[in-house]
Image (cartoon, rainbow over all chains, first blue to last red; front, side, top):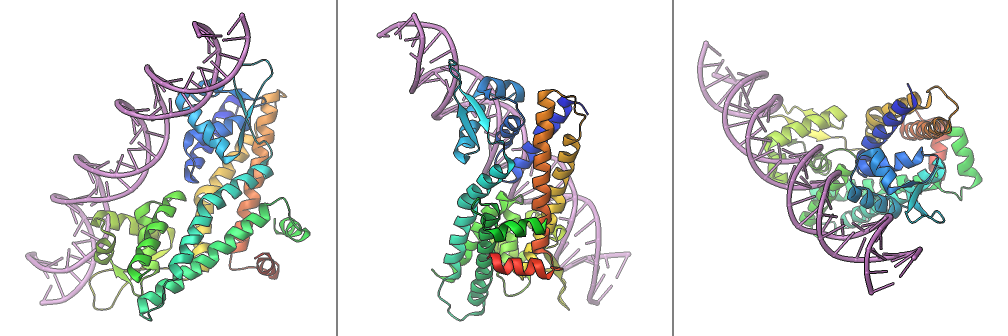
Length: 167
Length: 167
DNA sequence: ATAAACTTTCAATTATTTTTGAAAGTTCAA
DNA sequence: TTGAACTTTCAAAAATAATTGAAAGTTTAT
C-alpha cells in the first residue's frame, strides 16, 4: 500500500467511524486530515483535499474548534487562517472524553436521576421503573467517573499503575 | 412526576441516546420499554405502546435479538411470541460492550494496523502518517482491552479491586 | 389439507441529516 | 473609504436513514 491509498483509507475509515460516535463524516474527516498533516492547513487546502464545499468546511471546522480539538493557527504575514488539530493522542482522548461526558453522559445521568426519583406508589410497574432506572443511573455514573479518571491528567499513582497493569 | 410521564421521559431519552451510539431510535425505545416492563411483551403490545408499525417493530426486535439483548419468550398455550430484554444492567453492559468491540472497534483497529504498516519511504508525510496512525492504533487497542476486562465476567481479583477502588 | 393467527419482507413514502453555493459579513492594506 | 481577500451564514437541494403497510411467508390447531 502506498502513501496515497493509506491516507485515503485512514481518512475514510475515520470518517465513517465518526458518524458512529456522534459527529458527522466531514467533521471526522477534517480532523483525520489535520491529524496526519505535517503542517497547518487552510480552508482552501481542506476543501480541495476532501472535495467538500466551502460552507461545509467552515461549519465543521467551527464545530471542531467548539469541541476543542482543532485550533486556528495564525501564520505571520498570511491573510488566510490555518488550522491544526491536537497531535497527541492522549490529549485528544482526554478532550473527547470530557466533551462526550459533558454533552451526552451527564445529561442522561440527570434524567435517570429524575425518573428514578418519582414517588413510589407501591404498584408493581412503578417499582420496576424505579428499580431499573436507578440501576442504569448507578452504572452510568460509575462508567462516567471511571472514564474521566482513567483519562484525566491528574492521575493519582493508583490510576496510573492500574492503567499499566490492566493493559 | 407521575408514572406515565416518567416512563415516557425514560423511553424517549433512551431512544435519542440510542441514535447517538449507533442504534436507531425505535430499537432503543423497544429495549427501554422491555427494560422497565414487569412482564414479557408481544409485538402487538410494543406497537401499541410506542405507536410504531408492525414492520418496524419486527425488524427492530430482530436486530435486538442479533445484538443478544432481547430474547423470545414462549408462553405455554399462547400462539403469539413474547419478548424480554436482559434485566441485569451489568450483564447488559457486558453484552453491549462485547458487541460494540466486535462490530466497531476491532475492525477499526485492523485498519489502523494496516495503514500504520505501510512501507516507510522516509518522506516527512509518510513518516507522520505512520507515526500518528500507530499512536491511534495503540490507544484503540488499550481502550478495547481495558473495556473488555473491566466488563468481563471472568474478572481477576485485580480488576475487581480496581473497579471497587476507582469508583 | 385448510384456514386462522401470527411474523417477515420490502418497495414506496416520509423524516432527518448533510451538503452546497451564493450572498452577506468581516478584516485589512493602501 | 474602498475593494480585494477571506470567512460565515443559511435557504434550498441532495443524500441518507427510518418507517410504513400490505402482500407474502410461516406455523399450528383442527
